[in-house]
Length: 272
Image (cartoon, rainbow, N blue to C red):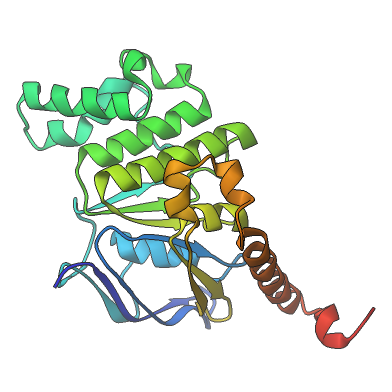
């Protein structure tokens, strides 16, 4: 069996002073190899908890995650993580950050250099290998983080708001890079984001999660990620169905936020 299976996943956190919080309830998904999934939802719906379970950082209260038919029971090299901040080794230069994983595996230097050169070329940093991390912009640091993740050749790439801290122009360029890497590498990618527009651009599958407890509310299968591989992303945003789907999901999430805040949804209340 190939792919990633999430089977009836639930997560409950016990509070220090008693009581508990049900972060996830009965979440099930089945991803084929090479699929690109984006996950949306209001704050507190369990998006990051789900990603941390997939990474093996947390053990679920119930349910199971399987990758290639094998249970996920902790962190492993077959799953790579890209965080909101690059989480780079600041005392190393760009090249040493990228080749860290292969170096720890004892890979011969010639092979490490070949992989590192190839990845730096792909992410547009071939001329920056000897630069210190602190000399790079935020967008360039995230490129290094992507290259470092890919250097370990994981089957699944988990991305937790990796573009959230970037300015609008850099974010758009990085969105294009994510699509390019997805298509060229054939990796399974799961992206957590708060941006509805980004989720539409970067998810051939898109899941909207609802809170209290965190669960899958609605799933979409979308053409926009595939279009974005060959089209300008601004043109994709103008393509048929994009604005309509964006507005539908925004209304859905706004309704959830109103419910969280204890205020009635104006549309349901019939207010003008």
